[in-house]
Image (cartoon, rainbow, N blue to C red; front, side, top):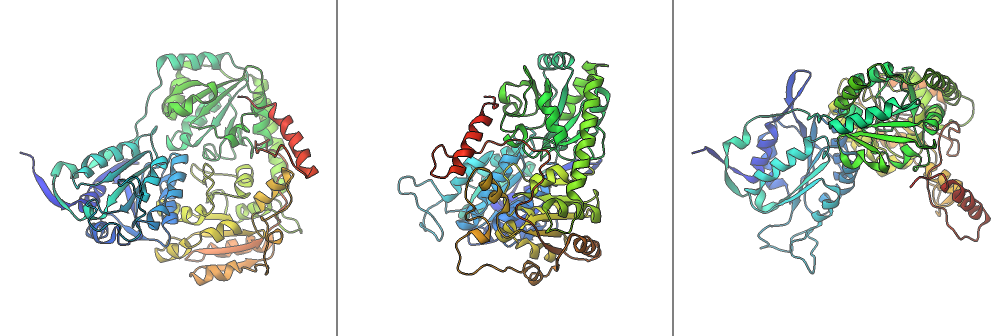
Length: 613
């Protein structure tokens, strides 16, 4: 007869999390780096007490906002290349639904996140409880059902023994390279406190190591044949290269076969910026080098990329007749996009298998020469826009200042607005993971919280967060959390007086300047926000600087400060890097009373002709 241990459901859950391990650099370490928690009546008595009992093995971090604590957990997982992760728990009602945006972020970006929101009473005796949203036609629904479309796996725990099978399924999803994404276990608050005789085997230590699927023989042979018939192959490196820890494999493969590499937002830092075959960013925010090659390529080997519209120029970037795409991806859904030849496999295992079969095959010398020449032209353009001038600084000039002051050894964190496009083009990433962007969901407010998660995952690294005034206003409270738990961030706030990125898009599509910049919005009093004083009020060391030169000086000074620092600089909302880039499909109204919109519509219709369906 197997032994059992009597625990509440919440205690069993907490104990189980402490027993999950992974192997990194030959050492066994906890799979879960901790739990972010904001307690309320739906989780404080049950799961809160359970977390207290395991606090020595599973740290509990207090946050200020449920959405941003989940962002921090996502940042931790991404910085750990999905090898480690965190859980987040909230009360029912608004505490739970605040986390839906973060769940969508993790879902889009294929990142592991364990969401543990409190839920209503399974026994329904006190219904309707505080914060319960009743459904007039379905008694089984609670607000937590909104997590279903943004969870890879969703379960509602209405009996204490259900947590046994739910956790087994959750772990399979969280650690699977193809299925990886958020898991939501909705915890009915009465069930959290109910006891059950759990099998002791449930709490045995489990070490999770990455699964590396090998390619199918037929798919591999087909991919090799396509490559061998090519003279102009390029590689698009996506986030899967980093998550597979395949950066060295990619470098060796590219060098041996003479293949230029271009990087997505998630894949940037797959190759060091200084590598001769690194053409930089690709697509809408791509370098001139990458986009030139993408337009001429006869074969595109997409490694670990979901081929988002920013990567493909809304599927108008690849222009060569008969161009073929090979989708090397662990997820068949991603591998098969746009009629690609599928090569379903782990990125590292797939590249190794291709290399073994390709033998001495290489791209043509002329193609490699074209790539290196285009790279040189692009680097000159990048330097020109990042060098300082006496004008109101552009985002590009601020990026140049940050890099000169802190170098490619830093981890750069960003998420939304105009900065991701400029950073994708211009930030000279160093080692793997040194460039950390959420541009799958492009979530305003991710930056500071995500940076906190990065710092928890990589405490010895210099973590720099860059964001605009719009993102800062949406979510800044985790500045205080970073100071409370002693995780220093360097935060650079670029104040362009509103939503500068969308204002530029509005102008580009013929729209009138309206409701984006403060000066173009309805207000009785023009806002005058002192971001430096605001950050200082939360305990940060802060400065407002008036020039790029002052910013460099302040960044060097801030490096010696022992807590989170915030530097603020005014920037030009209209200037953006003209070199590089590609058309992006943003629908322009077909009918308008404004001639600017009608002119933009004509240009839009012309651009649509290059789009491949």
